[in-house]
Image (tube, rainbow over all chains, first blue to last red; front, top):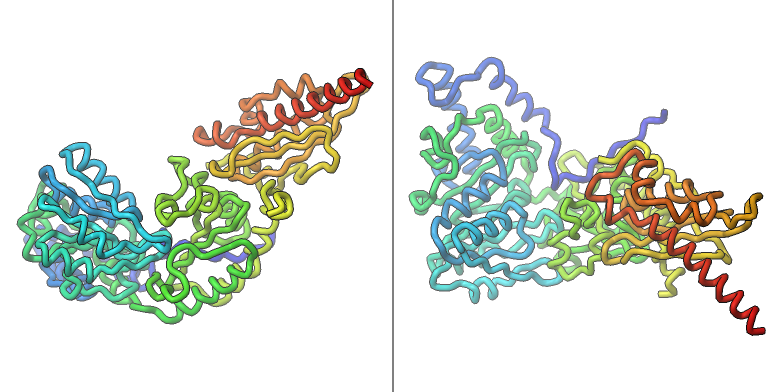
Length: 391
Length: 136
């Protein structure tokens, strides 16, 4: 059988571990396997390694090392941030385009503690209005949680402006930066962020490691969610995942902020794909394209369904994802695309392609060569084409 | 998540397209739900003199399961008598496809309904024809 080309364009879902990262991690499985809490040299080696890694991660976001708390990943970081602060009934402000790892904890806090949740709408490109955040703040607001960059459409929110407002009003501000961390500049101090979540496997590090930045001034207000040993200053119990943390730190060192070559390839992809009739870009576009993550493209194609599109592309070696209801366990279309005002049938026909460190120009050329034909073929068997419906 | 058989029918659907001057057309589903199926049938009498499906084609907008069930029903229904074709159930289609994910059993398994609608459309047209004949 002819070997087909493999093009991985789902880097917002996960990324390959960089060879340098894997090499850095290896000794920590079989040679340097000590528990960082142990007194002997094995343990102290692990401890030193852990603290070096903490400094590296801290530098990424202009934080202090003792403001960096390692977790098992983005979801745990978000849960710790939200549940750690909202320990009593109160008001939480978030947005309609957050990741489920923020929205579900909010739902939980509503059910368990009776917290009132304000979910701010977004405009048709996905932007949260800073003014809306300001207006939503109430006497009993415990926390504002607005994501930095969105996983589906890449929209980058005005985090510094929201941070300013929250700091002025003395409200704790958390941002889910899982998609933006290591891709665009983050300065936790300048942006007035109190808590920030990030994840290793989105930037060519291993899965199972993440971080929650907690500003020094608010650490004592966080209720730990995993109780046990006194690791991570008592904020997060459990033997540290030293190999994972080392890999995460290495991935941070390799990360390229505002990688121009990825943006160039992504723009070529967008330009090429939009030549397909009855297609459009979801999320920031035109003059707002620079407020979109450089590796993200999200299209809709009329008259076809995304799951079929993704699996047809997969058969031809191209890996992407969709916001179609048919690909979700809930059978509801993407809440993000819906929040942007897309009709359900247009969310069904969506395709997200996200580039990564190893995406090459010939990968983009391959997609531009293959995708139009796949869309055309699915449309040819769809009862809803222009010709059929005389639109 | 999908069986081999489902992927076979998804990747190479049988009897795709439409029949010009079809004897019966059935459409089910709703674009807002993501799945719409259209089935076209051509009817003639078989050797035993029973009305049966001479040809059948489909057009579907939908997910992998929707496309595979559409393809499968055209295979199951071809050359069946109308009475026999009406008896094909969602379960029969899922079985022939070596199973469907539980979530997809209902939303995307509309092909049996589409076929029934096509047969009913044929019967309605036929009755209308014979009514017209009597009044002439």
